[in-house]
Image 1 (cartoon, protein in one colour):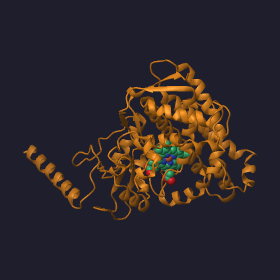
Image 2 (tube, protein in one colour):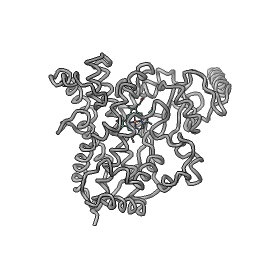
Image 3 (cartoon, helix red, strand yellow):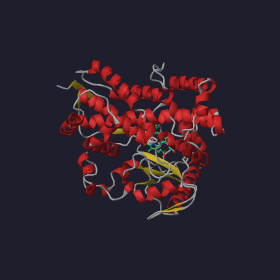
Image 4 (cartoon, rainbow, N blue to C red):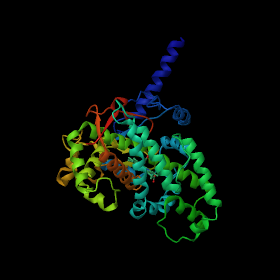
Length: 434
Ligand code: HEM
């Protein structure tokens, strides 16, 4: 009797689910969904992330479904119509606080406008000195890895990028940080508090220049216009640092694996570097970057094939009519950056690493949204120019000194809650250049 009752209940649940699911045609559901419970079992690997994830799952009533968009036109329409982040971002905000990436739309609109000037080219160019100094330090640290069988390059890069952020945001010579983000955040709170109490904050108060580095700009706006609370400043800095170091470290790692497994591409990059940096070991300056055309193509191609954040999720605030479906208000949708970047409009070789495609505009898709690594629309990545600049400076220093080799051109990656990373077998090896 009990078994029969259970069967009836389960059948009813399944019928309700089928009705809900097929009432309106939806985009394909992201792989890995199970009937009724959807993607609930897609659990992140990191213990810290898991705890927050389970809490979010309970809050959403154990039903998590992600239809997935891989058409650039559909994706840009959603990205510019619906700015709210999904429960996945609430999940991120428990880890990093309500910074720009996770704040509610009303606050995001105001803060994004206030923070945009801190990411202008003028400000970013002023970081070149720090990027060069820190890259030199990274290169000398890697000396001890020459000739070894494997090098965990991502770990070196993570430490290097945290250190670089610290110099950039706080202008500190020797930040007392280890690799752990929590230590870093604790330390960073002390610095912000000190800056707020400090006499030097009067300098910030008097500054009229809106093109100030991020922290100075926020402190200035806090002092003069009450535009941020102290907690908001801390949460913005937290988010910014969290968004900076891991994404960029993963991107440089993928680029090095690709260069290591495509020796012809690496030789061509080196040839270009030798032509531009005749005096071999000098710093990278802003005029060099325009001359590195093939190198730029390699970086774009690497970011296209292996975007560190392979998807974003948006809440659908209002019904959105796409080419073939209507997304209903109240639902959530996953925009697959990975699939957009490999959309058939990239051609039959969309899955291949072919930097040359960027050298010939005719071989690129005509659709400007076909490259989505930094997300799409108005709520895209505020740090994209920063990311590309730091990637370029770091790679120039690394490639001038070391020859990289890596196992296989067919990179396998694995995805966590936010990022895709290369699988372990893709570690790289380094040798001094002759
Ligand atoms: C290769 C490196 C990077 C990649 C691929 C990347 C990618 C992305 C993507 C896909 C988003 C959208 C996330 C979403 O909507 O859920 C995003 C947002 C964001 N990124 Fe990046 N990012 C990178 C580096 C950086 C850097 C260096 C910074 C800071 C300096 C940064 C700061 C942010 C912030 C603050 C947001 C939220 C923007 C907003 O909501 O207005 N990112 N990034």
